[in-house]
Length: 75
Image (cartoon, rainbow, N blue to C red; front, side):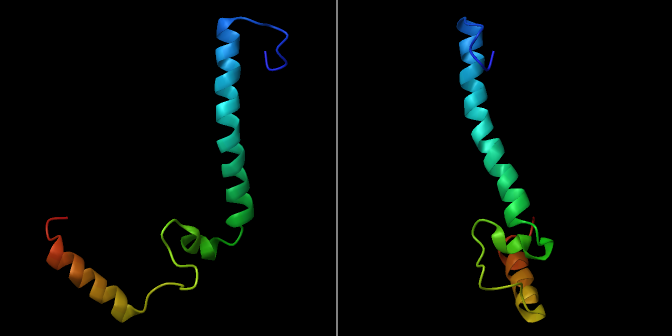
């Protein structure tokens, strides 16, 4: 079917869906192997993180926890 030797409505729909699916899968595979090869740095690659900053100090972490407890006590 991928070589388009078999043609039909269902085969065409499968081919289009396959093409839509393979791009993101390929990108994810490259991302996971190339960008996350150093597992100590995975948190720095996440969306919204600052790659120039690695972690928090203990004081910053405790301050953040206090703030979350005050603003979101039920969570």
